[in-house]
Amino acid sequence: MKYYYLTAILIISMCLAFTGEASAQRRRNPVPADSPQVQTQRSAASGKVSLAITSKSSATTSNPSEVMHALSVQFTNNGTSQVQFTSNCLYLLDSAGRKYLPTRKVFAETLFLQPGESKTIDRIYFMTAPDTRVESLTLFRGTVILGTTRF
Image 1 (cartoon, rainbow, N blue to C red):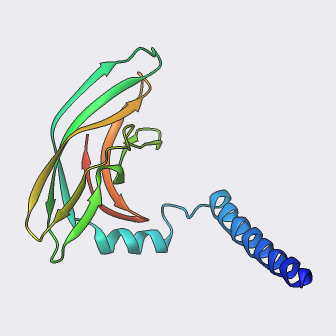
Image 2 (image 1 turned 135 degrees about the vertical axis):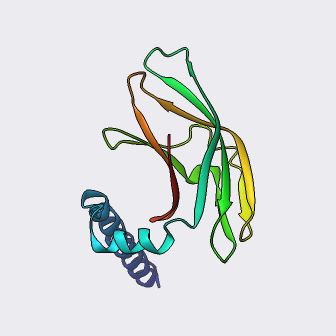
């Protein structure tokens, strides 16, 4: 009877090992931004949600190597179906290609946008280095980019 348990544990361990190796392989070899797969996903969702930064402010923090950016963003659904996302589905992109995710993920606000509907999220915070030149704000879901705007 105990051999059945050992066999089951061995099979589960192997499955977890293969799954972990596959995800580690994906992290080591990310899909290039100019690959046909990414371009297809971008073009399918491009312009589905338009973003407009209604207010932005920057302030120094107690850590001299960080600057906090506070944003208010208006989202408009330009598509023909409902869109759901949270404020955690945003990132800032700097001139060097680095991405910065929101810093306060605990209290993420969820939006459900009907076609043609607009809503605003206030108090979205990002931390960057003081010399960072932010270029754009992007809304994504998974690997699909739903919308982007210049910073």
